[in-house]
Length: 157
Length: 342
Ligand code: FES
Ligand code: FES
Image (tube, rainbow over all chains, first blue to last red; front, top):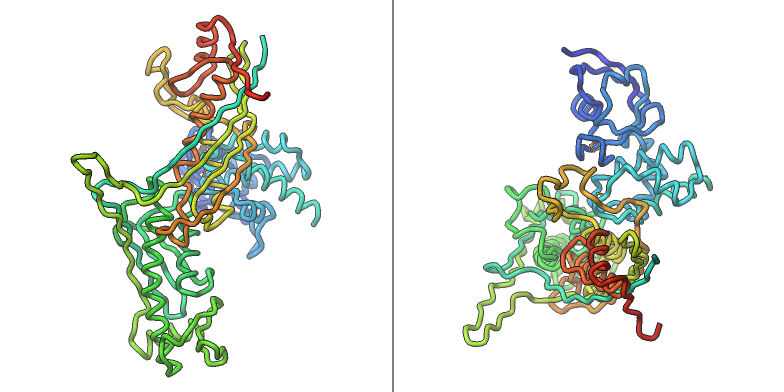
């Protein structure tokens, strides 16, 4: 059985038919064509699929798509405004915080949720905020540094 | 019950590439009609940076801006043959192939420009900013873009190049057993400082100091980042990760990320790196590439540091708290080895 679900995706209204029981990650990638959230494990333990729902980070592979009806979903696909990158994206690039890049969209969204509610986090608050996101390549250090740098840039702006 | 400090040291000489019937890589370079250059490879970039480094090498050789070069690693069906991304061979093998392909394409670029300017190709130079001009006479110039357009639409000429780099199979001398399986080695030395809790058996790596000799660091930030990430993986292999749990049996093995232990963001280890640059003669602009060796020396250095801290010799990985505690018990207590001069 398919049912219609309407929600806001990166600021624009989005309407899709979803299978009952479908998870949000699948609906974003296949239904909406937003490939920015990644499939890593499908069971909530890697964080690659992290998106924001009403500003809160969620692993979208464990969210029932029907439950986002009427809510606001943000993905990495909506972070930049036109050609202007989000300060987090800029800091990740400048700080070489991605190698293979597979964890990056999830890291960016977890970091955005943090900075939106806590604009000048400490190092351990950053570690805590991304503790649900696995990275196999970078050793985390450059990611933590980039998030702290983005916070600094946003504070200065 | 106490926390013991330990320091361990390890060195590595790491061979670049391999010797299974020869080790070739190929690259193709061609221009678009608007003077951009595409590099086609069959080896993939899984985060180690061959796309960035290949782009730099091609741009440098062609004499065009790096922004005008694009590297396509998409498809081993349509790309030229390559052994692959492994054995720390990418920068060295693919880099050399890219340089050869770009050299051939550059010769054609200069031929086409010579025809446009009605001069001889050997009299031409590139300025690296998208222009080609007569040596000593910068005003007699043509852009790379105009040259590429003219080559395609007026001259009927391709601006393209093929490159292969092959390290041939090295036969074993039947008398001496001697062979030359690789053409260059990278080197490193690494020091680990850690603590061991003799009550819990827990090992905590506190600091890594390392020196890496990787030829020329073609992209210094990428080299440093690859070394930091690789060392993290070394720590992870040394202390956490295993698909083959030794206790109690295989059926207790990890089946997902919740059971497969890895250090997280809170366990990031400060790592101070010195990169020593000694350009290697047969390497692309001297760069050998760090590759696998960024993880390898971490493991023996940690094992040595654990021995230095509590006198336990672990000869299997990972070095879990249980193994450390069993070792301490077998020795009748922690036996710090001390440090000369400390
Ligand atoms: S794919 Fe959702 S947490 Fe791994
Ligand atoms: S950059 Fe590869 S997993 Fe994080």
